[in-house]
Length: 218
Image (cartoon, rainbow, N blue to C red; front, side, top):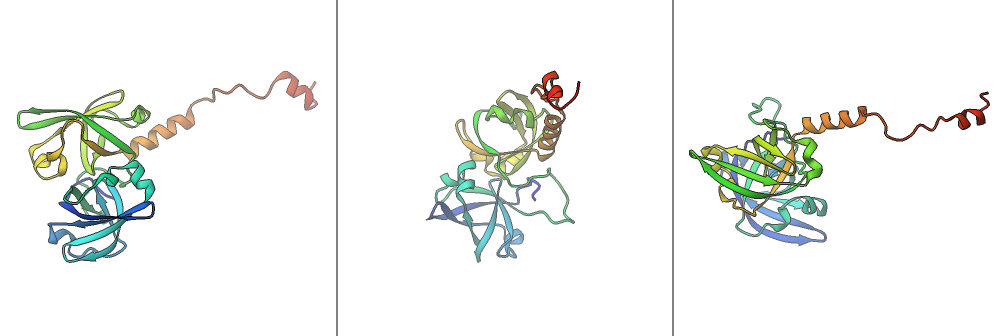
């Protein structure tokens, strides 16, 4: 599990096809954060939870499977691409963002970027089937960055990006038309699930007068 507080902006050094998947080699810049990274540890790469399968001085590799390639932007990575990096949260860490699982729900598209008093307002479109999972003032992870939803409408939301976040994550490189990984708040998903489960069934009852008669009831 992660918090959405990006610890480093790394870069993709190489990509190599492996069957239906891809092996990514990623270089990091923060030795303080990643120097003790071990094989089998989880790392969030642009919001997608990946497992380190090889490590070396200043770099690690992950194997990205076909399912992840379908749901995220990782398949579009090319050498030199900047990526947001975060290691898995420890029980004693401060939870500075929100509960981020690293399980990307889908890819959104930046539709507008507006500078407002030094901050940026960024609007992102997404598949309307996720509408029930997002609310104004709720949390959203964009490329692994924990952000607060400023406003929402069907199939689109807007977030406010403070200057520090803009300067210290890959959000600084976004433009209209950029694709981003989206993970909606897990708490919102559970609430939506409970509401769906509690909703009365729309199917007609199978217990009819003829059914009762057939079961021996007069």
